[in-house]
Length: 134
Image 1 (cartoon, helix red, strand yellow):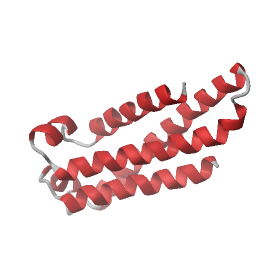
Image 2 (cartoon, rainbow, N blue to C red):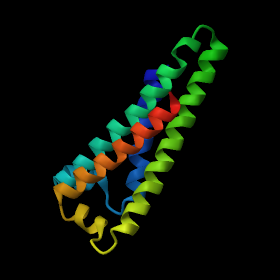
Image 3 (spheres, rainbow, N blue to C red):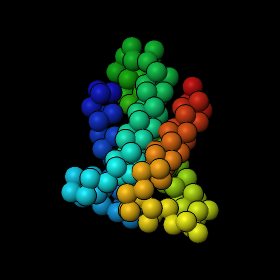
Image 4 (cartoon, helix red, strand yellow):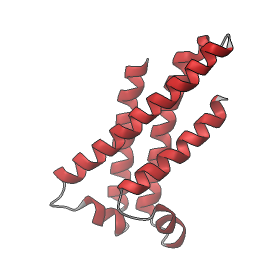
């Protein structure tokens, strides 16, 4: 059950951040071969996976009966939602602080360094959320 939920949450995270960052991730990755967006999405998947992993580990002992297992699935969903919300808030704050450099334009213009920096930013947020979960 956790595996299926994880896949759904990873895909949901992709669509949430794709909605917030003003470029079409699928077109940028597959048509434009934009490495910056590829790095950003890779970091997003790693970051989301870190949060899901921490949530599953936290609830692992609780999977002894169906009621506790269901509670674990719900908490995994909630923790991942909180993490994604923090990714969005973090991204918007970072874009605001770096507005002179226009983070969105750099990502759109294939600036690999900007893509990796943003990926690292998402992973850092995930590590903090992961620590709070545990």
